[in-house]
Image (cartoon, rainbow, N blue to C red):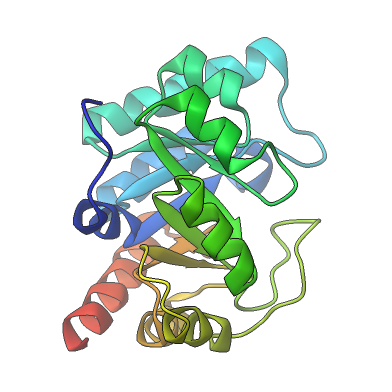
Length: 223
């Protein structure tokens, strides 16, 4: 990547952001991603965590497979937390939480690749921006069972608070986001929806992605 991503391009990528690993899927993750990309997923985060998660070569192999699908679809492939894996794969970026390596350190290691940072407060958001984040993951907005270490849901109010406090960086809402809730999150200030179970546990993955993407874009157009 020759330079840092622009905020306008980042917002487009965040519209329908699929986050998953093998432990989240009711079907093979490769099949889920194929359907999600066909349905209009705009960015993908490889998050291989939790009980039964793949390790070492198995994790690397799955990551390469999913990355190849994203490259063919021209969708950014982001790695959750694991900077070494991201660099080995030459991934498009990294997403980190507040308990992971610092944003300042990760930015220094990944150069101009995309850097996403989870933030739960305005202070955390400002610190992430200061240290080079390209977007903020805000949540959990609603209760979620996809992350065993998830904090308490804050509701869409946290998105309003971020924007009222002058946070202008692209933001994606995460945590319990469904098609029915996506519009509310966008109206509250998010630029897109990050989704795990509403897609990975859906009976018809492509249709689930299409519906969420359509609702997000409709809400964005309404401004």
